[in-house]
Length: 261
Image 1 (cartoon, helix red, strand yellow):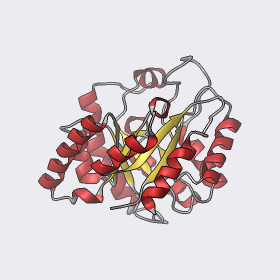
Image 2: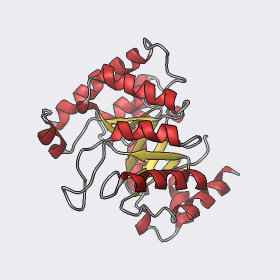
Image 3: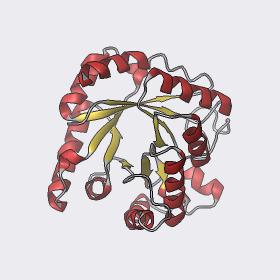
Image 4: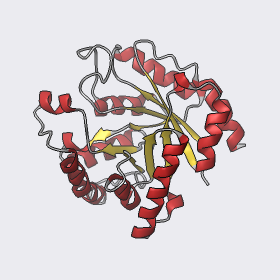
């Protein structure tokens, strides 16, 4: 199976952009594998009208400022952009970064984004059906662009819905991302395995990614090993502004190195 990778999601809220930029640089220098942001228009917690920055313009800047770390949205909202445009945006950031983009996508859920920016919120089921419709369109557009993407763009699908989302993961994703306890995540993996069998997909082709609340972890090795034994190889940790303290990640990087030795 693939090596362990460590990712930090820099929440683009409650901070000046310079602080976000500098935190990404520190993470890259420490050897973090992936830097993510998110695709929202308002803070998800803290002061609801606090400072906040947009996802894809930020990723273009990260692509220029970094050279080794992979970058991507965790996750972009399918509802916010025409799928053809979104495909072109992703391809462009892919080229700016020299092939380091991870295309994270989900169906969307944060109602305020929709209401304030004039998108139809609809229903969770409707948004999932739109994602199902748009993923093939995005992939088809990647095959038509000139120049083509630098590589087969890795698609990360975020979400734990057992009937539709995990089916989409089996059909389209290179990476599946969700969060929960080892027990709950193990149950999700069993369902994903069933979807893979149903669509004829090799379950082991899909990298499994877990989001971890690092502030609640008392024993890095114990928790990391539990998820590792389930087959998880990507470990993602969120950090918030204004300071973006990434010092905690050193212990996780050391654990990663022992697993990858």
